[in-house]
Image 1 (cartoon, rainbow, N blue to C red):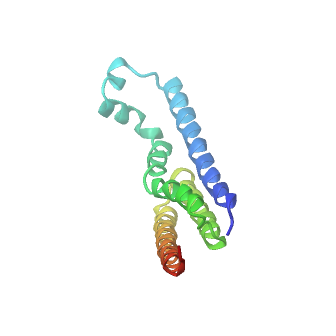
Image 2 (tube, rainbow, N blue to C red; image 1 turned 60 degrees about the vertical axis):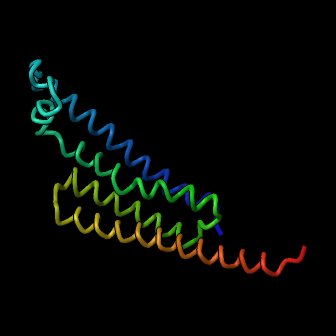
Image 3 (cartoon, rainbow, N blue to C red; image 1 turned 120 degrees about the vertical axis):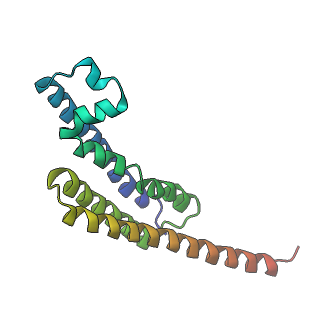
Length: 154
């Protein structure tokens, strides 16, 4: 079993989130500089969304990074504390992160649904495989623990 190797993909995904956050800030600041907002442009969230619409792809991607990846970030500490961060889980985690990078590039840089949609759906399948693998490993560990406890004499 690996221990801390599972943290590196999580750190990489967090880094991607921070990069996109900075991208959002830079895009919005540049837009505000070239198109100064009127008070009404930022009076409500709906008005602000309309105002920033020309530079909203990074913000849309940032929202995506706080949807399915939440399940990834929830799984990482569970894998650590249960000692189930196997080589397979680490490899799947890296594949998941790579797919999220491809999704972000397809969303923000290329702006191609034909790139980002497959990356998204395959990443979802990878994440499901990670959770299913975790559940199987925990069930197996529980069975082994129960059998060992049944064989103990006090």
